[in-house]
Length: 181
Image (cartoon, rainbow, N blue to C red; front, side):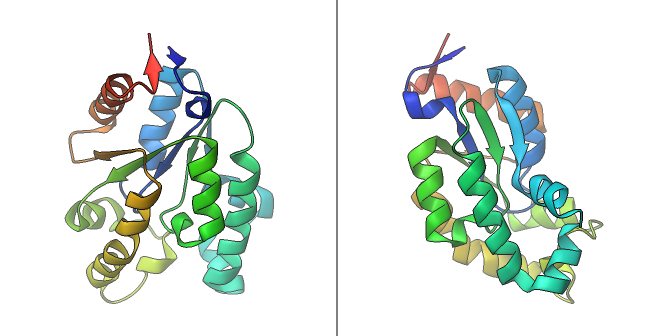
């Protein structure tokens, strides 16, 4: 498949944790012959430390600074499908990079599905609290308007699996002229 618009050669996935950005991103990158990158994995590779450790030592602010550098760099490469962290849209600089350098897809989901998908994942420092449902609800209320702001497309990533979500994204990208056969 070829892209119909120059900036659509890159695709950036945004959305809350547990929406399936990494899973969908890998599958979609293979379908579109793009190089898959994940901001969280890239940060871990560069630092040699996992995300919870970075949060413990540097706090969320330190992590966001690292995330900003990674997004600035990776969005400049051509032919990239980038899966971003759930909070990547919090910084205006990140939103500008994403909007100006590719097609942004907001993978939306429900708090219930997020809870189900993340309940045993100890690699999510913002959920290692007494009330993860409350935290996810607060994040959804604060971040969804930012995801909407940057997104070219919004796709609901329900519990139907990554393949079905990828099929829906491909259909929408074709219908709306972002890619063509």
